[in-house]
Each structure stands twice: as C-alpha cells, then as structure tokens.
Image (tube, rainbow over all chains, first blue to last red; front, top):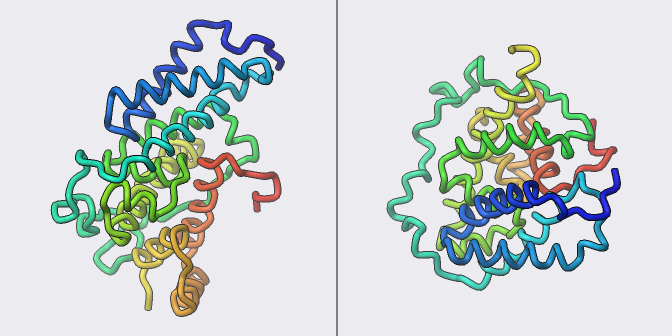
Length: 196
Length: 61
C-alpha cells in the first residue's frame, strides 16, 4: 500500500513516538537522553519522508534510525552508574532455574516444541505485540542486554564496556533472557494454536 | 555427558563467541538424541533473524 504522506496521521505519529520513547528509556535509563534520541530520530525520519512510501514499514524504518541514535549514545558513554555492580548482580546466577529438573534435563512440559514460523512473521504486528509483552515479562536487566545485543546490535565487548559487566556475566544474562523469552513465545504464540 | 541446561547455555553462547571443537562435538552428540534442544537451537537462530530483520525466504527449513 502506498502512502505519500506517512506522517500525516497525528495519532499514528503520537503512538509511534510513545513506543520509541519506551524503547529508548529502557536502553538508556535516562529520560533526557531518551527524549533527545527520539527527537533526533523523528526529525531525521521527517526530513527523509519524501523518500519513504511504504506505510506498512514506517515503524521499522523509524526504529532503524532510532537504533543507530541509541547505539551512538551508548558507545559514547563508557560508564553507566545505574547498572548494578558485578558483585551484587542478582540475576547472574543460574541457580533458580525452573525449566530444568535436578539433572539438568528439560521438564516435560517445558521441552521446546517445533515452531511454525512463516516467512512473513517478521511483518506480523500481532506477533510483535506478543513479543513486546514477553520481553516486558523478562527481568529488566536481562531484557536490556538482550535488546542491546539483538535490536541495537552492539557486540558483546561494547555492551560489557558500557555496562561494566564481565563477559561471562553478560553471557549468563543473555542466556537467561533467551530462555525466558523463548518459553513465553512458545506459550503465547507458537504453541497457542493447539493449546488455546 | 552434557545435559540440556548445559547444551542450551552453549547454544546461547554460540551467538556470542565461536565454540571450541570439543564444545561443538559435545553439543552435536547431545542434539542428536535430544529433540527439545534441537528445536531450541533452531529457535535461537530464528529469534536473532527476527529481531534483526534479516530473515530471508531460504532461512526457513
């Protein structure tokens, strides 16, 4: 569908701005900086609006710009005081994992099932709403590193430097985020058809 | 012998660093007999493709 004026709809723009703000806040933990990167990203997008004619991917496009702005902000900030110190990294232990039995094997009900993931899934708004809800349910520290790694596409070294984490702590946080996110997506999206 | 918790941990780490030959071999042996972990591995790849918007038609099995 073509839409020559992607930003003509104020309601859409307001909602998009809110989504961008929550995303930026989670990443930057700094209200002012979050507002700044969102403004910059939106301004950049508006400037190039003429080059843009597919309203279906408006969000994708603006978020791509936002991701770059956030990555720049994080790279320029090699100390992040809000992050917990490694010594009291509550989330870094694997001890409380509920998905595996005492021998480290999957509990029967938690064993991953085959996912049916059609090619157009990446464009499915309903899927991304479920994805957002699942990510919200992941503990904040884990969700944050997951987003930095997978959406902002910083590499491990950059994340460790920005958050003053050791590599092994980062790997554990990412692992836990992936475990929980996977479980939630299987429960609420991929397996929902058969079980609902 | 590797268990599922160790195998899934390694599959997550494989997205962060190259696994050693020993790790790759142990993982291979585990996933041969464990369908849950086999699915887990494919799902990790899918998650990355989805979040990075890099999914292509041939990525589907």
